[in-house]
Amino acid sequence: MAMNEPGHDPADVATGLMLQITQHSERLALLDQQVAALASQLSQLASADDRDEGGDVNQPEPVPQWWKLEGTERDKALNRLRAWVEQVYRPGYGHLAATLAPCWDQHLFCLYSLDWLMELWSALYLTEERKTSTLASQAEWQIRLLPALAEQLHHETANCERHRVKDPRRQAIQSALNRNP
Ligand SMILES: [Zn+2]
Image (cartoon, protein in one colour):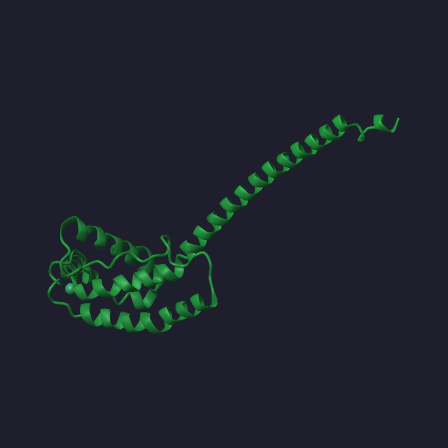
């Protein structure tokens, strides 16, 4: 009788073992899938980390070689700088930005200077994660670097005679003054 009880018949034992092996294989396949999913999530996290640490997203643009840029290359670099000055610098930095004369984009000195000011601003403000060091750098940018540079830019452009006549805004003001003395 004992031989007929389930689990004692060699055929039953073999079937039971096969069943267990099948179940283990299924579990292993499931674990494989989970491991693959975790690996994929990890690699996504790692590449996001790379970007935060200075990868593609916050990496400054290559330095424009203002002294020899020409044609479309120069236009492209200049348009990028003009956009920052008009959309960020002038609206955001009030009385300091107001000291920059309209002919700034015709002074190499201003191009060199505003280029790094813009890139540094982008690195500090176009970032999702703010660390204590970011805060300290933002303070440094605004309290120390910005006023010092704004003063230099003002000296460069304030008494500029070279572009005085050609600047349409100055001409408009001048002709308005001439009409209404
Ligand atoms: Zn000028």
